[in-house]
Image 1 (cartoon, one colour):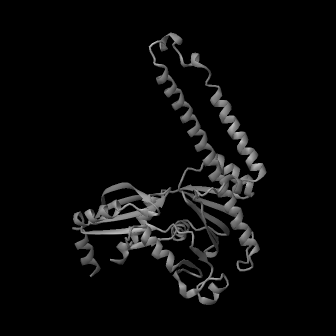
Image 2 (cartoon, helix red, strand yellow; image 1 turned 90 degrees about the vertical axis):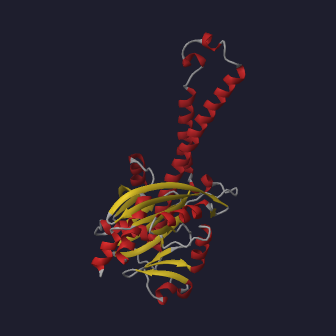
Image 3 (tube, helix red, strand yellow; image 1 turned 45 degrees about the vertical axis):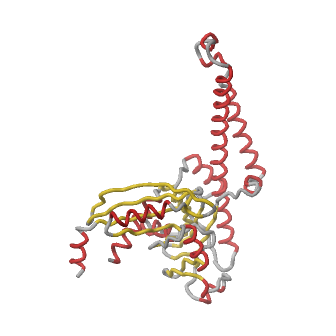
Length: 340
């Protein structure tokens, strides 16, 4: 029977669509598959208004259902209320003050991914009523990466993405600890840097800002632009002021982005420290010393960050780049094809 299904599938085209909500936008990645060949791919971005994805996403999928034999949708859950627990039964959940019957559970070997039922309902509302065929927790995504290259020893693994840091600690194949950090900045007067930076880290940040300002000040006067003042005889004063304001705005934007990146990196290190502290001090985990850290990076961490993080954490760190959009799409294709 499976041979017949594979033969029929070879004549049909299926569209696999995966979405991730990040930076207050919904990022879509899709691939069309015919038989065992990828015949096309597409990317799109949809706005998110008041916590709900624009209805254009619904229209997008409706149109595709007319173009393809089958359309499947997968989404990554971005709720801050999700956990990975080293427990699989009610008694184990009780240790972590979680009601076993009020949560959705995916049970693994000796541990579980846990999400309150209410969060799944809210997530569907965020997707404008769409009901994904598959919902992936960042814990599930991280676990799939860990399984690809399992390591011996006590390792802290992190999945680093735009809006969250997901952490799990494994001792070989045994999951010991999980933590999810929502890193989205709320626009309600909350002072991000006052909360995240220590005095020493704030001083380092001030030094970076001063260095950037010194570098920008070295752009010099009008004579450095070249050609001499005579070239500007026919330039309207208002036009020149617009150019000057634009240059200043661009310089300030670069400085702001630089500061923001440093803030995210410091937050990442701080989250690792918090996770390690909880793992060591909470008796529910019976934490033993972590030997190294592996970060699956979905953004743009570099060697400078690696050096800073290793100095701060006093641990060896391995950085592995990942395209999370394609990764989720691969996961859904494998899972759905295996079920058919």
